[in-house]
Length: 110
Length: 397
Image (tube, rainbow over all chains, first blue to last red; front, side, top):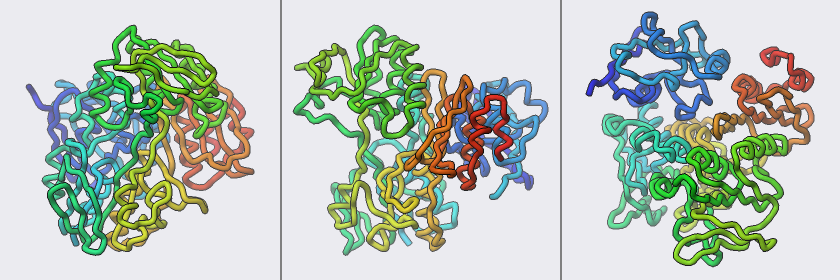
């Protein structure tokens, strides 16, 4: 069964390539691979906004719609919010996301 | 320097991972009494109980992570004693030497005494994966669940049980549910939500005993009422796991006593998470929350390596019940009034004089995030803005 490959790109250009099974969250894949900047303090409950990421253009129509309340959480996250901002815990990895590119926002205070 | 961590839960995992992240090269051994690598507990009473996720989705890190980081996990091992003079942890059938020791033993669910039926079959606690593996097959549509205790565990279980089609009765000995942790305004909102979903509440009555012989059949209350049930879940609080610390002579008092750095009464022994009693605003408290377990575990790791940074908890908490996300920031201990934001998804703001202490946000993520920001910055909020449904809370920042 196909694993999903995700490339995480840090503000300084450093990359981490992660592979994960479909069905899990993007946040979990990031945490499993120690991707800096994705913390997921609340374990994916959309209660902390520490899994804030930017979905690269071209992928945004495949990552699904925002969850109710997600926009509110993002708006008030500490990091730079952009139109492509999502909470990684709210993105479920599907086969269409194989090759997904994610950028990490500049982190305030770290 | 060899660091040994007793406890492979949220705090133990956070401490071990942080030690490596800070550049510590010496050996790290994490001892856990469950046969699973460190995992997150909150989904146990929610998605895991509903059967929506497998155990490996609970793991805090992949198995490979610990190996890659050179952290040795000794799983399914019980630490039986600490020999502080020799600086050794004794396991059944082995001894592990330490230079620094972190106690992250967590807390245990309080049990009803067996003299009043607490040990009857089909009476369940909620703490470990194994507890839920035993409970889940019993959560069958049409069965009657008795929930003893109207705290977060009980309420989350009630919500899941209703979703699965069980009849649910919640019995709470205190005058109202969530009495220890939230104002009447919050308790009322939560009670209404559960009642709208068909849960029956009995508050302000003590449980006399659970009834049954070969399995639990219900309960008898102090006022003589009998409740019939097919299974029971007991959520009446947790006690810190301090036996190991106490037996070794460390200072213990409803928790392993630590200073603001997380150090116990022994200079090379530290404690973090549910088991620790720490200083906060002039008092000694325990904080049973994921956030504290992580933050205090990380603080202890840094301080073991000489950072000397006091740990200041940022208490926040959440609970998912039905479609409601209850989010709480701050500690409302010592509040003298509650300001209600009167919107369909209300928030309840706790003040002591002019000082904003905490907020309960009931399905309003914005209110929660704004409140959290203010509380963490020790700023206050204008009650007239909070109480005005038309006002944008962002103006408070």
